[in-house]
Image 1 (tube, rainbow, N blue to C red):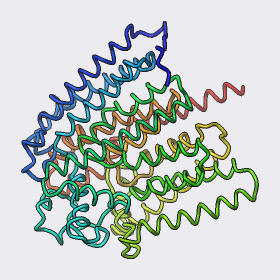
Image 2 (cartoon, rainbow, N blue to C red):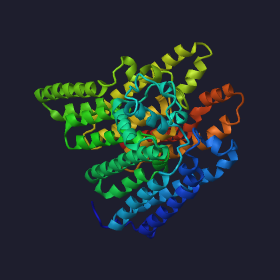
Image 3 (cartoon, rainbow, N blue to C red):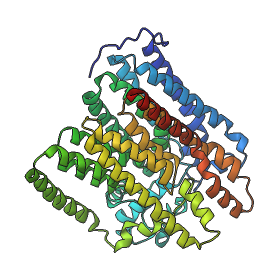
Image 4 (cartoon, rainbow, N blue to C red):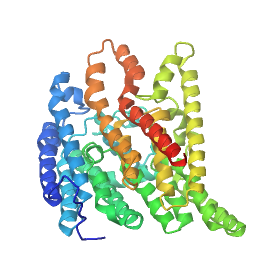
Length: 492
């Protein structure tokens, strides 16, 4: 890690260290006064299922302060990122690390209001640790007397995650006991640890790939308002999955090919997304191993160890194919292009057939993109091969084929973009992380809160929800066109 300042005489930021310090102080103030104070967990914890609608009293105009808070946070974030590109002293590192620690501590006290996911995770953990039951078979409704039951949203559904996450949830719930605030704190602390791990891995990876932008890459990721807000404030577990993705990248750089695949598999035992990256990682491994004998030995050993790992993980919970939650995933749609198509198809097909057709189509296109990413990774011999392939595959999935879209998925994109050089990919990830907040702050209040009856709100959400991604779509089209134009000019 270099500790000398990076000077740029053309920069418009005269004192980057001072900028970082002021941005950290102002951001901390906004996280407290603009976000946490109005949703203070110790004051609201006795009220189950509080959402933003209830906090705002159903009045969209009351969200203006929150919207302005996020705009200010993103402005400070971008300014900090620019400043971090110019300085890398020990003081700058202390400000960046100290800043995100302060942000996390403040958001630890926020009531998770944009989804009940953290309470569902706590309940599934209690199903394991308190009731010694199986969250892949037993639903929360079977434990209606549990004090956490009123807080959960998916009362008649089995777990949507993998056994890796559920085992961690069970351990966390056992440590936290029966107190609600303690449970929220413990689960958020677990996510904070994964966020710290992701930050550490980003630093290790960037020190190898691009030492001149290590601090800037760290700021790009851990200071991103959506990353901090959704991970610590709202308690979504996407950063836990991202940790294993970043670990896989680091292991591949170290040429530990079997461990790379195992890291992706462990990530998939949290959420299934890392499965998409196994073809690209395997392609790089097979390319680099060179000889047929070494490739066969690697394939055999990796396959045996992978099957054993997955078998051991699922063994305590196995309840048939339903354990994989495949059927449930084919019926989940919100705020995405597949959702709009699914909604329109219901005019000519029944709901189940429409859902199955759209899910199969989206899965097919995602699979084809995964194969394209593997082919691209095979040809790209740079050390950025895997993170670049992973990033493009993630953006394809999030922009075009994900059926069930939520703002916290932006954590995946920004975590990978932080490893890439400045360009369209990084700018798209930043724009994407900013645009997705419109679902929470603009789309839902203006389109859904005022819709009556509820069926109208559901139809509006399904058909108009993809507009949340309008800005990223437009920029992606522009970026593709600009890249194509520059390539033509280069070869002209």
